[in-house]
Image (cartoon, rainbow, N blue to C red):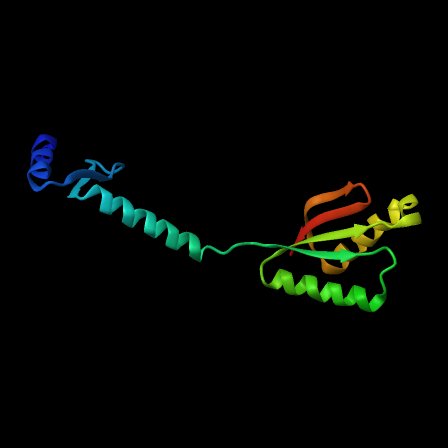
Length: 137
């Protein structure tokens, strides 16, 4: 149908001529209420966004002098977070004289990552007394 005729029909009915398939040849248009069409599109987009899975970043704090049982417990926690599809942020906070030996914090984090067989998303960083790294399964 010619464009002029479609525009005339839309005006007679008090509706709008909306191009719904601009990439096809020839372009596809519909006569409809544009406000309602826009509302349906937004509603559909909101519904898709609600169903999209959100990836959370879970935090696990370690210490340089962590005990074996605590370490095993945190390893299990990290594995649980990975199974749920989350990423994990490992933190090691240095206290007192530990600040003189930052290599212990690096070693603790590297051993933890090796035990998990995890991928490093963000490299090991240091902010003041805190070391942190972001890992995923």
